[in-house]
Each structure stands twice: as structure tokens, then as C-alpha cells.
Length: 218
Length: 200
Image 1 (cartoon, one colour):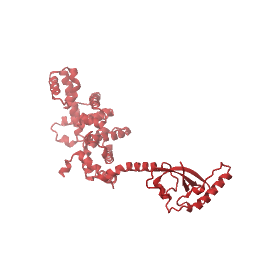
Image 2 (tube, one colour; image 1 turned 30 degrees about the vertical axis):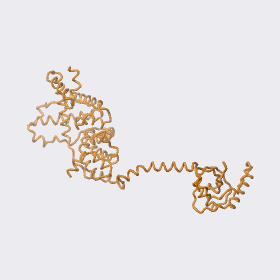
Image 3 (cartoon, chains in turn blue, orange; image 1 turned 60 degrees about the vertical axis):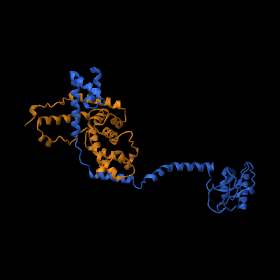
Image 4 (cartoon, chains in turn orange, red; image 1 turned 180 degrees about the vertical axis):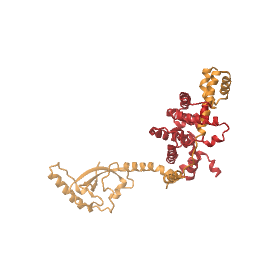
């Protein structure tokens, strides 16, 4: 091997960082024979020794108990109430479960639900109240020179809890697809074999609450 | 207790992730000196070193779960964190003071059988440290990790987040720059000092 071939390895050789024994042996014999490479080798060896002394001369003061205590406190705070093991695995899965639940809910409703959709209270269809409200609405629309909308109010059923709200002054009719499973809560009892979605017209009052609904034909 | 002292680093990290306070204390006592030395060598001062050590272990508290034993040992991982923090500190530091405390104290010279050589070594160590502090970061950190802390190229590459070949070339280049800086500033690399300055 020539000086040029061996020179890149001389630093590692001086540092004792040559892995291959064969290369190390070649370097050793070459350094013995070549005065120029020996000079470089000696210089690098002195550099390593000087750096070693720098490392050894760095005194490390004893740990400050206050700092160690502060770290221990920080560790305790960071882990306060933090469960371990299986519980932690479940917690890691919680966001995924939340996303899945959200997707199921959105898929079930398919539309943005008006407020009041899931109001509590008994299902008490109040057809008279709805008819009265619908008459007022039709009258208001007619007086506003809007296109006539003829609604068959008798086909509407009061929305659960709608009777306790303020009188219906105006409203909006929207059509949504509701899962059949929701119908019993609205007073309809579909056959047990029924499934999927049904189109429903929902009358939304001036206050944004659902007032009445009817099953719509496709 | 002896078992705890010998407990594998990876096991300690796993316990820390599980919230084991004792494991954290063991890790802190085991590696604080190494992190402290690295910070002193990198910043050239003991003043920010304690803060860097503190920040490194705070990072361990919050990021222990990110440690990957298959990528590196715990020491290179800790020194990698220390390096990132020290770079930030060093970038904000205007002055570059030398460490006030040095193990080459008068006590050491008093028991030295060769006072001249002892003085020369102390001067040389101080000169090397000064020259090291003036090197660009990328060369200084390679020398500190490989030559002062004895990390392998692979471990240093993990700590620095670069390739092994890059570490090797930076180390060689850094040592060459260091040698040039020492010779340019007439710092001694051998045990030669002016005889007139020594009073025996």
C-alpha cells in the first residue's frame, strides 16, 4: 500500500478506531517504514492524547439537590394520574373510537339535524295545534305575495315537545332522510322487518325548533 | 440496589415511560456527568451546562416514549438532545468564556514528579480547549463526541443525525483545523515552555 492509500486511515489508526485487524497491521508496518507517515501518525497520536487530557480535565461538580428535586417534581407532575399498561392502550385508542362513533352518527342522520330533534318528553301527537300553526303559516305566506304553497296539514304530526314552545308564526319545510329506527320515538311503529331510511318533511318554526313532521312520499 | 445500578438503559427508559420515578432518578445519576461534560465542552463554560443538563432531562420526561433502542444507545440519544439544546444556547452566547473550574489545579501540580511537564500539560489542555471552542459547531461536536466522549462513528452519527461518513470526515477535518489553530496561535503541542517563566 502506498502513502496515498493509507493516509486517510492514519487518523483512525492513531485513535485506535480501525476495525479491521489486517488494515491495522498494514498501517503499522507502513508507519514503521515511512518517515512522512510516521510524522503524521505521531502528530495525530499527540492530538488524541491532548484531547484525552481535555476530557479528563473536565471536572463534573456534584449534582445540585435542588435541581434534582425539581426534575423529580416535574417527572411526578408529568405522570400524575397517568395510567399504565392496558388502560393506557385503551386511552390511545379513544380518539379512534371517538372518530368511529362520529362517523356512525353522521351516517345515521345523513343531514345536519335541526335543534330540538331529540327533545325529551312523551310522544303526544297534537294534530289540532299543528293544523292551527300550519293555517297561520299558509296565511302569512299568502299575504307576503309569495307563491302559494298548499300543504295538507292533516298529514302532519306534532313533533315531540313542540306544543310547549311558542306559537308557530312562520316556518320552513325541509326534507330529510331519517333512519327507520328513529320513527318509534316519533310515534310511528314501522314493521319490525323495515329498515333503511325514510323521507320525512319536517316543519321548522321561526325559532329554529322542529314543530311537526310527516312521512313524505318518494 | 446493585441490580438497579446495573439495570440496562433500555429497561430504564421503559420504566420511565411507565411513570417509574426511581428509574428516572437512576438514569439521571447515571448520565448527568456525561451530559454535563458535553455541554461544558460544547459551550466552553460551566454556566449554561447545568441548564442544558436540566433541559435534557426535562426532554426525557416528556419524550422518553420516543426513544428507539434499535436506533441508538441511551447515551448517544441523550447527547443528541444535549447537542440540539447546546447549539441554541451557543447561538445566543456572545462571549466564549473558558471554564473556571479545571481539574489541573495546584493540588495536582504539587504531587507531580515533573512540575515542568505538569505546567506544560495544563497549558496545553487549556490551549486545546480554547482552540476547540473556536471551531465551527459541526467540527467541534464531532470531536467532542468521538474523541472526548469516545463514541463510535455510528453512535455519533445517531446523536448528530447524519451519516457515518459525514461524522468521520467532520472529525478528520476538525482535527486538522484544531492542529492548525494550535500551531497558528503558537500554542504548544509538546512539553516546551519558556524556562524563564518557571520559578522552582
